[in-house]
Image (tube, rainbow, N blue to C red; front, side, top):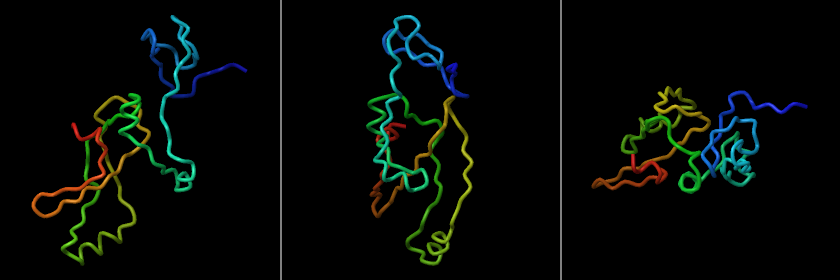
Length: 136
């Protein structure tokens, strides 16, 4: 059977000579170097049982490859006021939320990153935001 690129496949750049190749080629047209894998390392397969959510260390991937990058600005999805128990109870009952995001970069969007940030007294803050985003 004839090999064809998947719909929406993108051209790839050779790591040896920087030539841009068609998506269906497995070797560079110019220097014949084999196409590299995209380099993403997914978390352990047991986590895939959670409806498509599995861990990915973005800081590690950002150092290893240029596949992971941001293409939209940071937005607050929800906020909780722990000092107001009635409001907190109403917020915790919310089962879904609609998001509208504006893509700021020309890229293929295939994931969404969510993290939390806790602000404490005296300006103290704790977060699990990836380090790759701290420079923005």
